[in-house]
Image (cartoon, rainbow, N blue to C red):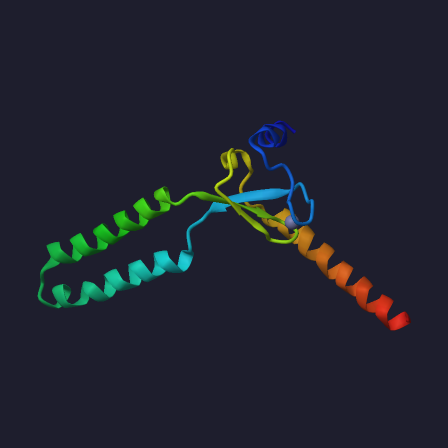
Length: 126
Ligand SMILES: [Zn+2]
């Protein structure tokens, strides 16, 4: 795969913890923070809204949206292992990793469940 080969040149090509080669890239941005900023903006605009200061309401809401967007642009990427969810930051070539795919994640989730079941049956047979 072309993407995989390019990522190898960047340094990381497999998870350093479990050796899994399937990693995905996501924004290192806590979704809660974004929601908190929007919630604060809504709260802050209640009073101006009651006083019919519509321009101030718009300024607060659009300002917070712009702030959110800027934050989102400023934060770096984090590369995550599908299998053990280890996170890697500040790596060269993170942009070369593909984004998260639910289908792949589901496969690893199933694998984990199967492994756990095998472990428990092993213990029971002893
Ligand atoms: Zn891993």
